[in-house]
Length: 438
Ligand SMILES: O=C(O)C1=C[C@@H](OP(=O)(O)O)[C@@H](O)[C@H](O)C1
Ligand SMILES: C=C(OP(=O)(O)O)C(=O)O
Image (cartoon, rainbow, N blue to C red; front, side):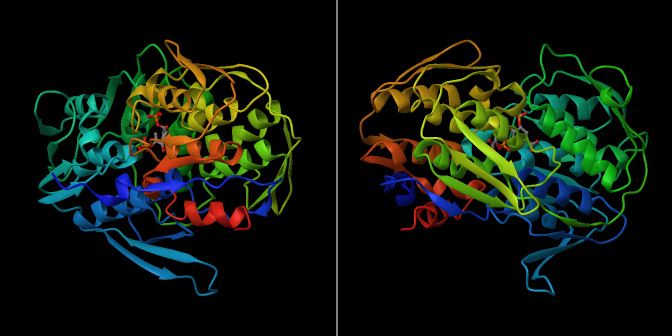
């Protein structure tokens, strides 16, 4: 077996010698970019994405759509203000091969798209992608009329035998392991002959803001969507069949990727400004304004962006993160440095994310001298004096950024495979050292 040297490399996490004071331009949102790509590919006319995120997950999405015949031209905007991608939809083609990497958005959002292709589309990905839940999408698509070959586990790898169209209609799913099952079916829903009606029948449903993001973006491209919030039944989303418009969309900064930078202000008692923080957004990262304020900071949202200031004190928190699970690693890192214990709840489904995030956070923080225990649905974190050591990342971008947060306050932390941040934030090491003025 060959070992990728990048995966074993150790990155000395910079220690902050004082309060940070920086403006950090955070690249575009992964979740918005990948939804925008899918919707543009399904539209009946060309569309544009301004300031898309260029990272492993979004390049995998673009590559997969290209493999199915979609034109995606990458260029620079006429005003020189950043990247613009022009998406030229076509009749979707098979045979095609899709590499999903370890991108939840690619492995879940694209099998429904592939049912519309005129031939087989083979899906494969990183070893971890075989373990991540996909049954909600596979089973639902079969009910809606699709032919899918998998190995019987309801997971990757698989082949969707696109027939050029899909009946669609009503379907029940259990999306308690991932909100992305619901988003996946809704995003392609307008292109199914009968649209789609998704009824979630599971015990809980994580990441609701991400489902709202899907609904909002569908409506922006002209789809008609009925939701529990618009007066419909609880846990039922209905998408009417119809053509989608090509739009000119500007992608918001990734607020979940803003997290480590805001955390830096919090743990060093400094100040970080994130320009272009949206006044209204469905991104879960917007909840950081409230969560990090409760943990000791304060913030001001202006037309320019978000200014977040640490007070010098960091407090523990008792919080249900079920709606904003992807914020858990960064919150756990801050909680390990706080002046009181924390309980993070509602995130059992994180065991099936990029890695088992609850186990990984527990192990890595404890190996630096911490006192973290796993609960059935989260973590108990009792802050202790931490020491340096290797912080393993398990090919999880948010483990790497969590380790960097701890490294600000604890000397001698080394992050193994910081390059794994390329999943959603390839510039992380440069942005981090830039913030610290190094
Ligand atoms: O739809 C999306 O863009 C996402 C939904 C969430 O997934 P889960 O509901 O599987 O947690 C989130 O954690 C992931 O980072 C992005
Ligand atoms: C869970 C995450 O990613 P994915 O889209 O692969 O599910 C994440 O980014 O925290």
